[in-house]
Structures are given as C-alpha cells and as structure tokens.
Image (cartoon, rainbow, N blue to C red; front, side):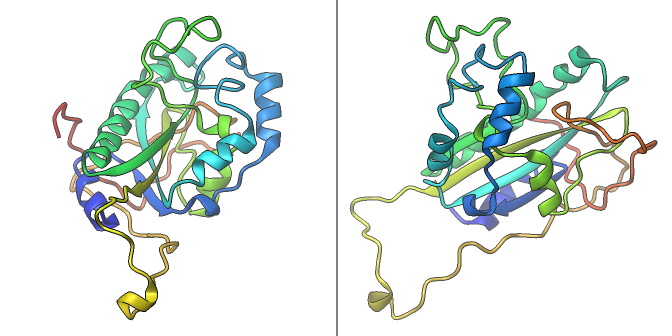
Length: 247
C-alpha cells in the first residue's frame, strides 16, 4: 500500500493535521519514563503504560521494526480544558478513528503498531497487573510510554499543539510496513536495474481546507502556555464529515 492510497482513505475522517515520517525521525528519551514513574498516577496501573509496555529500549526496538509512521491529530471542543473528565470524554472519537485507520491498513496486508494520547480508558479499572488485558484489540499504548515527547515531535514537523483554553488536541502514531509474501521475493538493485527510492522522505501536504469553519483544540497530556488567549486559525483542516462505523 502506498502513502497516496493512505492519504486518499483518511480524507473521510475529521483529521486536523497529519504527517508521514520514519521511526528514525522520532526522538526517544529515557527521561520521559522517569517523569511517568514520578508524576503520573497511571504508572504501574495500566497495560497501556510503563512498566507493562516494557523498557524504553524494548519499545524503541518495537517501533523500529516498521518502515513508516503516520502521525496525525484530531481536535475537540470543551468548556474547560482543566476539567479532566470532560477532556477525557472527547478521546473516544479519536480512538475510534485510530482503530478504523489501523484496521484499513491491516485489511490491505499492512503490518501496524499504534500508539495514542494518554493512558487507555477502555475499562473503568484496568486488570493490570493481576490479569490479562480484557480488550487488547481496543488498547493503544500511550505515546509517552515509549519515551516519545509529543510536543517535540509536533514542533519538528510544524504541527499545532495548543489551540486555546477550550480546545483539546489528540494525537496518534501508526507505525506500518507492507507485509512481505513468500511467493514474491524482494528484487535486488541488480535485478531491477534501478536504485531503490528513498523511503524516508516526509510528506508535508496536509488535508484540504473545508468550506465551512471548524473549531480547533489542545492535548490534555501537557502543560499549556499562559500567554495563549484565543485559538489561532489553523492553516489546514480535513473533511468535517463525522466518523462512520463502516469504512
């Protein structure tokens, strides 16, 4: 499956911004894990968080087994971003969208591994560490659990992170690679007579701007700057169509 085919598919979702990159373009930092351990109440209580996800080294090795990454965001409006319950309630639509995109890739013989914002909230109380995950097909490990600082990744690719006090931005990373088949061995450069293309080129194109205005948002994972008073108008937006169960 090509990136063009993926782009064509995701235009049906209310994705705010997206970027293609490679696992090697992501910075992995052990210090993030230390912050999780000292400050996050979910540490040691969820299958989507450390230490259940493994060491940072194991997480990095897992991520680097894939060739490419789709990094995307969606936004939701809230009355008060400091209201944790209200903010977390908006996460379900983003998770649903992540599931649908990942399933589409898998249906087209693409191997995937997805990470999402915040700790998994599929269950009122996680079974970790006493029992196996009840819904492994619904659980996405937290991005930060893999030593990835979302804010740094957003800055690197000139994406938006904070859009005002009444908006929240959710992020997902879907690592992917096309599955290789036994009956179709990979050809060498000598056999094809051509040099392999560089697969690490990032895609800067964003989704087309809709005809009507769309509200925008910030992530609950991180501290927000004090000097932001109102949400800036984003330069690019995707389709406003609501999620559909079947795609």
